[in-house]
Image 1: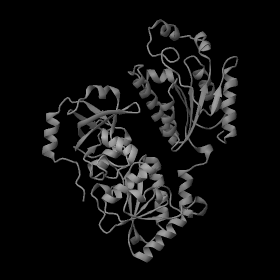
Image 2: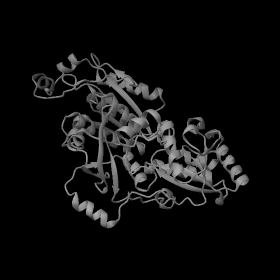
Image 3: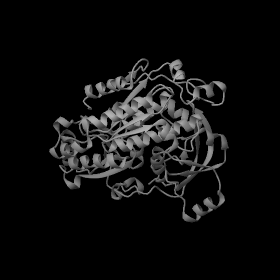
Image 4: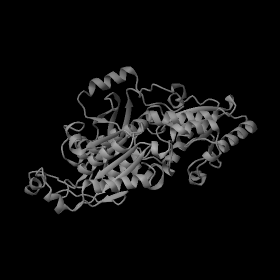
Length: 460
């Protein structure tokens, strides 16, 4: 069994005592998933985040610099502030979202790639993430895979065709099958797991072992190969999958069995019943209506009109997250540097996602000038809800005429730095569902365009 990276209590106390006051990095949820897999030895032979040479080799050739197969770009992404403070040899605390110290990183490599900053180096684990549920299914923690050498990667729901194949395989080989699922968002993943369990109830109890792994299901070549590498570390010999095995045969010695993907049209009644909660109809799904545009473009006015219209004409709960109000409450303390503006938007994204998960409608009206962060927010919310981007396309000259707060004048004089449209760019969205030109139009008229889209899409 690959050794884990968790130090003993004596060593942990030494590390904590010797590194009081060192810089810390708050892990994103995805980084926390990876750290947990590191700590329990699932990323063997790695003992930490990969360095620059390995990163480039994995990026280009799907192998480490020494030629060992590898697919995931497992360097630690950090922000500019931390990157500037750290030198080779420094230690960095790795903390979870609640501030709990998970591990120390000894930085051995500092580099940038595609305008993002990364560290590579040795991980020394202090504590593993705490889980309140499904502890018996977390086999990756202690590598409890004895007698299991066949795995079915369950990167989606299981339907009749997959169950029939798994049953036939077990009857012919008498080999117990490891059913590998993935667990990320507690609400969504719990419902997903109920669907999986409903399908597995059609198999003999002694024919399978259900297992969960922290993170999202593999959805491309790189993440799927990462799962194959983990399976190798677990001693798996045969991999059953609905993915295209041609993509991975050159990187793995596992026996690969490709089976047809099932469909909801041919599923079990028990699974379909659970799906009514996992995949509600569009008119019951949470919706984020995300306005973007220059300061003074009319975002807030239209957003307020839209909230009023929806509250009057539907029975949905509608929340308005106005950019200026959010700045004074949820995001008070943040400045206007690019990093602070991105953090402001990520907080809005987080709140929007939580509202949408429970079937609410949220209207957001920040400036959101950068295409990359808008795409990030879309991807975050569209996992289980509906995202509608509304570009309020008002000319800069018109926005300056409407400047009730005097912000453009201050930006022109240099009093406000990095002001969108003046000293910092606004990247016009090319993926907006709705584009509104407000010049010569009332807020009510613009709101009608949004309502028309909602009706056309079956959301109203």
